Image (cartoon, rainbow, N blue to C red; front, side, top):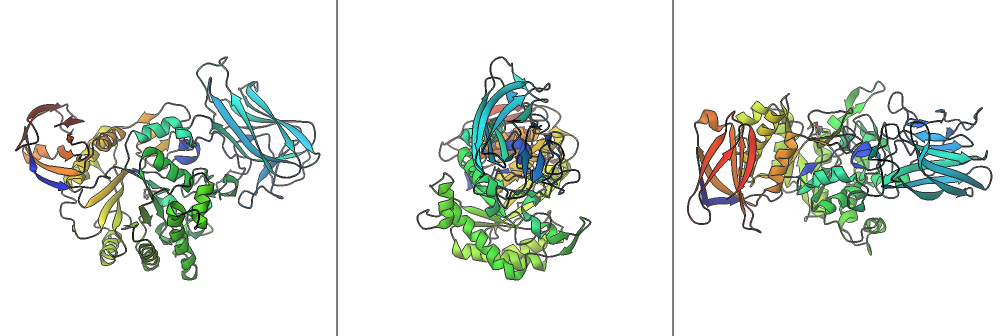
Length: 595
Ligand code: AHR
């Protein structure tokens, strides 16, 4: 077959087409990207999930909240807690307690681990606590002593180093132990065990973060997904509850039915973006919870609703404060000062804010959504406002209504977030999807998409063909992000996902990951028109895209071959600036070539 490339025919496209969507789903954050090795170190698990309580993941603690105990076992208390947002803590006297981590604590020989906890003496003035990593027989692998002093909460730290006596990775049965000495009572909370070696020293699991960075994402959308608008009004993610000292952050149940410590909060998300050279795209709820609904006593989502209108000015102010917090001057802004106090005096250079996540497009939604978008754009015209067009694409009535609202309010809404999960065949048969989009309307952020179905390679090839079509339409589609990014084995809330992992360093990268990486590493800012001379019945199984990078002058040809046979392509460049080339792409694979 022949591919004719015409460098004379080209158009500017977005230079941030490939980004990532990070949501705390399938244990992506706690127990995932957040490097914390202990589970429920804040003792804040509770009846939010059936069978969970403040002692979940701990051994040796009586689960009741009573301060009276018949035995010497540790108990849970809430009297005079370390913070109003973290009221539960454990009281130990003479018997040890153990944390099982995320069903195992994987540690490496030769590595160092940082222990931290808050503690106070309840009776007596001093108490010795040994912190240790122990093996399945309870024998210490590494240990250190802490001397707790006085009746007030204070933070204590120690380091545990795994000596060379141990080989490789120790895993499933390793436990973290708090071993008290003597009978006096001591209160402990916010117990943490972190590897010393984290991604750029900022608390993220290094192996996972490095693999994500290899995608070369231009932006990161966070913290969700449905997780951000939450299940009911009380479950909306408020960014202010995710910053500051961990003990003062507000842990919460997430919509995927597990506990978030918020240790991976907005500060950490922004820092992560900076560490990867990606732009932050924080998304805040549009004043309504997931599908505008409130769970009733039986947990079934019922009445529609949003934040009461009387409370909306405060909510809108929270949105405006985010820009202040991220970009403001610590000398004049209290929010910016919080950022500086947390260790980042320089602005985070926030340029985009998302409002809403595939919400049900109702009157409740529209009122609140427009109120937020308008206020944000008026106060911060420099910020790109990324709205939403409801769940799923045409012919859904939400999508049609969502687009109508966005077009009518273009003054306040710069782009909208579209979501779709479809069979590979849908992507193959809708290659002109964006060709007819109104170029004068708000831009498109394809914030969630993936091909579903049983065959992993089919899915990736369909996504690759779609991305070729997206690049051609990179003048109207501004950004894309595959969803979801991460899934911990055994904790699937969603299927398929891009990267599968467990507690160990065995990470499984899917074919979709490889496809995203190819596009992320070979994106451009100019689309060069090309034409493929193959019969239509075959052509729809082949994606081609030629892009140029102005900065480096490089021209990339990406070919996605979903045909069951090798594709031999004679590339003929018309005019100056590119030569001819013969390329081959194996059956059912994708490749990139420099032209
Ligand atoms: O990506 C998983 C979920 O899919 C997101 O939370 C939600 O926005 C969508 O329905």
